[in-house]
Length: 431
Image (cartoon, rainbow, N blue to C red; front, top):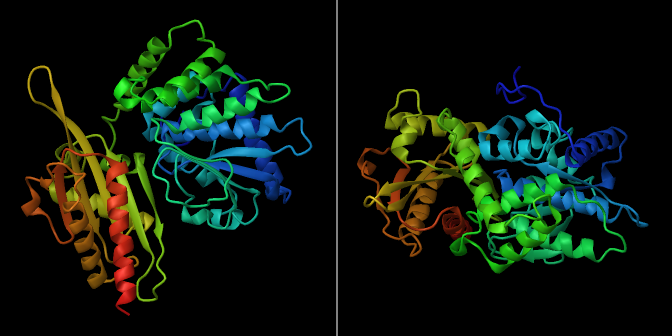
């Protein structure tokens, strides 16, 4: 039997309180939409990459919003919205494993995904009560007309929606840490605590474990550690050692995360994709669409996933994907490890930049965008030992690949975004 994303997965009905709540919530939302009552609902949504942290934080806060207000004069209806298409969910095997361990229904039938919305986000955003953003600093452009009620994020604070409440930005390993701490603080202040299903608590521990590398000291803050202890205390595993639990979860999830041998290049580009539109006030300069992909393997290995196993085909398949979703600038961030000796490995990162001219920008604008993005990348102090890829001289027009030993998407994204924003300002001044 094929799953809803085409995978051969036998049907397994979810058991337990989390699955039942999630499925019923999805059903109730669709019934209310049909009855013209979308305005009663709050959407809790993460980023479109749909990683375990983003998904778990959204589920946890939606559950909390509903249950913490259930016996009040102002009960709230809340649902977690995954901004990942249903056919892309299994491109993250670690999510599939975590949801199975949480006893959720197979094929993700308990979850509401972006492609299951009965109306486009631009229309629906004007009807719902509002949105809560988790694991992202602001909503995607398609939700611009929705009221932003709260934001929980562990990335850079861009100053958006200062009136949101709660509004928490904190550099911790996992956004689930921030959501979990707030949830438990509010839960413990209620006159009577609501039931927290063990499946949700264990899913939260899984999300923190994978983002903190099993609570390893170099990757963990005091907040991650303290919140994990509080969650563990309420779970079925409360008699077990926290360190042992988190290390076991991280090992299991990391093993699953690496099960991508059968993925095509298109799958790899889609599985961890983040992007959005950047507006400009200038009539000369169009809106620009930026997209960032993260792939846990080298360009050489990615090329072997293409039909012809050649460099030209990597860029042909990347162009087909970005044309499909209407992206102007793509930054693909690759990472892999090489052995330095028998005991040690060194992490190598690659940045692949492409700019296309057939969507919103003409040839001259595309050339200029490529120029400023290139200058920004090559001038960034954070990108240690940046140098052209060993096959850079084989690349085509508006294509570039670098290797470096610096940070990943959290470092590269603001570098490129600021370059594009400055380019827009430059173009506007040139009018």
